[in-house]
Length: 168
Length: 144
Image (cartoon, rainbow over all chains, first blue to last red; front, side, top):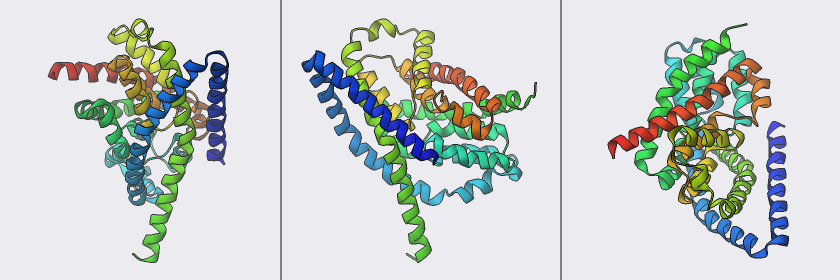
């Protein structure tokens, strides 16, 4: 249900952008044409990359099921929970509107807020998306950024956990 | 492959198809928009993004906070903006904020994870996006 409403937002957004193009087309045909050709050029680079993303995504979804995440990040995960929060944040894929209901269930089951924050922070390090990041920004950038995200995710989890748990 | 294994495989494929499919409209909309903005903004990027560590990262983080979609979209958009002359620090803050700060997703996050948690997490992540962008670029420069 949630997913359906998000797809609608995406479609509305697409129609909005098409409308902007139509307006541009009316006032400046060559400008709109140049922008659209630029878009086609970008798309030819993006589509093959999406194929790679898809293949890696299938394998991560195959091995990191909801049951496994639940087991490793549940109430009794202890110190290992931090490690699991980082690993699952990196591995579990999906847009936020798919992840939030899952995390909502885990929170009800006793998952710590700090682990929730750490999990969500590590969403930016996605194994399936790494080839795309390397393609655009290089290997050094990808390694440095990924390491910092993982390191800072723990600090982020501690801070968010402390502030969010303090009832005013 | 046994029946259970095949079913898991099928489930994984359909989940991945669904994720990619639901992201396509936003991804291509943003690429369309970037193509258009690029033509308008080419001459202004150098004025907006001066190369200052602080201001560039704040602008990048603000842009990432109001955008949404799976992280790979931010890499593609960021990569294209980089080619147009936007500074790497702004792009880093942009891709960090894209997936860790979600202004558009705040109501949904609040519903499932609580309002206080969502607000604190988003504000903290905004600051962290800037810190990580600065730290990453400083590290890359140090090793160059």
